[in-house]
Amino acid sequence: MTDETYRRRSDRTAPSRRKRRRRWPWVVGGVVLLLVVVGGAAAWVASSALTVKSELEAAQPLLSSVKEKVLAGEAGSAQSEVDELAEHTTAAKDATANPAWAIAEAVPGFGQNLSAVRIVATSVSAVVDDAVVPAVALGDSLSPAVFKPVDGAVNLQAIRDVLPVIDSAGSALTQAKSDISTIDSDALIGPVKNAVTQIDSLVGDVEPAIATAKELAPVLPGLLGADGPRNYLLIFENSAEVRPLGGIAGAQILVTADQGRVSITQQTSGREFDFESEEFANSHVSKEDRALFLVPFGLQSQNNTLTPRVEVAADLTRSMWGSQRGVTPDTVIFIDPTALTYILEATGSIDLADGSKLTSENAIDLLLNSVYQTYSDDPDAQDAFFASAAGEMFSSVMSGNVDVPKFVSAVQRAGQERRILASSLDETVQGLIGDAGLAGRLPQSTDTAHEIGVYYSDYLGSKMDYYLRSTIEVGQAQCAAGNRIVRVHVTATNILDPAAVEGLSPFITGAGGNGFKITQGDLRVFTYVYAPVGSTIASITGSSDQEAAFTGVDKEYPVARGVILAAPGESQTSTIDIDVSALPEKSIQTLVGPMLAQPEVKELAFTC
Image (tube, rainbow, N blue to C red; front, side, top):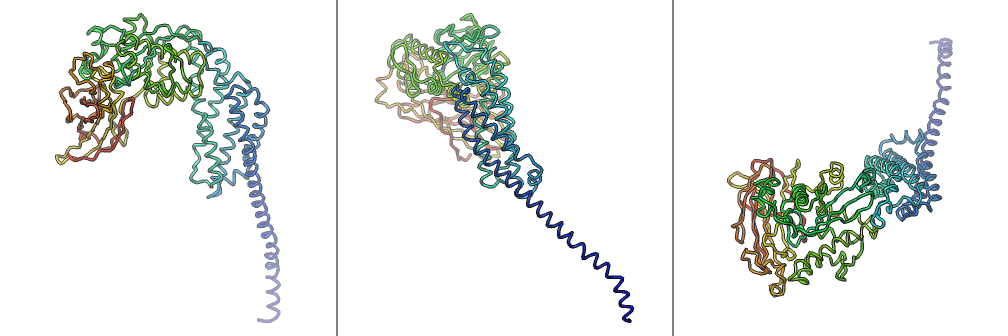
């Protein structure tokens, strides 16, 4: 190759190399520009995150202060705070509403933290705008006192006035709760996770109460007699004489609501009702139930609670009121003594007619034991004492001497424990009863478990169950014969000191002509075990006489009735075997009826 040839070839290729060299500044410049943009976006996101953090931190004490003032009925004094609060929460929300933030949320490994921050900021802003701001705008007319009776009456117009705010607040809180629940907290870094937890807790504390108010407030005027008088029957149970529903039916109060005023219109006790006819009993109770629960089920008012089905007990009770008292109340509410102790925490102590005080600390002893010692030979005086206690507690609530949030909590707790149960013929009221958890339930099976029910019933006519303590042991085993058995041990202990028997009232021991020939001081209870639907009762045995043991049914449930007879200081056990071979193999859970002293449930290991 000559030099000339080399030069010509070089001349042809030189421009191409120069052209490529000229591109490098653009490429480098593009990369630098991209880095600047990404860095700027990152700085923008970081700056926005700091803004969100500082704005929400500034909002937190304001939100707490406003909440306390609203609950205290002083919302009018919180206007300046709520204005400042709204500015902070809006600024926090706006800081997350930019393109850079949206892009950064897609970054793997970190974006979920930004998503969580945005959801929290947006949720808090919505709650403030749609709940807090309109609530404070109502001034001091919005507080728990709106629902609080004054001199026996509730201000219906005040309730109507707050309906729009309750509706708006309920929707905002429910949406916030739903949005926050979509956040996967396990994937978040510590500070973000803590913030999500705090907001979730704040919304979780308030949302259930507001959601309940949102549902209740629109129908509350009607329930309080805005459209005409409404009757409600309160049945106070005595769990010293235990029953599957809770206790024997004692004091009974009919209250009437008319134009917001609620008052006692009739007051009596279960003992004052006459026995109904066999025709009456057979028209309300199946022959299977009458065989299972025995006389006087369906005949005597006090024993309407022999069934664990609240709707059956309510039907019997309202029908007896209709036939003997001239009123058939749509809604019947059963309340046991333990539930009363919860309510007394909201009302404070109550002065009784005999000069004593009823408190949450002494109510169990006073109502279930001491009264029988004080009036040991006078059942009328006992009934008068119970009537006074029930009436004075009702009057205390209706006169406004009650802490409304504590009262609501007391009812919710009692409902969860099935110590307050209710049933209504009014569809609206029954819906509210179900939503409030006051409708009760029987054992239920799930995809993973069979549930059995265990209920106790005094069959001595005594108040000896004040001294009853018990344990329930439940286990499941595959037998050598190929069948599968669930075994239930119910052990009852009579904790009465033998030396104290002679000093007890016969109303407590039940030895005053009860006809059962039971030794004074002994307790006698039936144990009802509701087996899973589709199973069969294999056997009923016990360490005491099982002559009254019985295998029956309550609609779809096979039921075993065992017997326990225990002397003072003694423990006795009833054992029920249930054959579940025909059912899918699942774990076993236990539902226990409400009692004065709730039994301990243990796992049982056995062979069969």
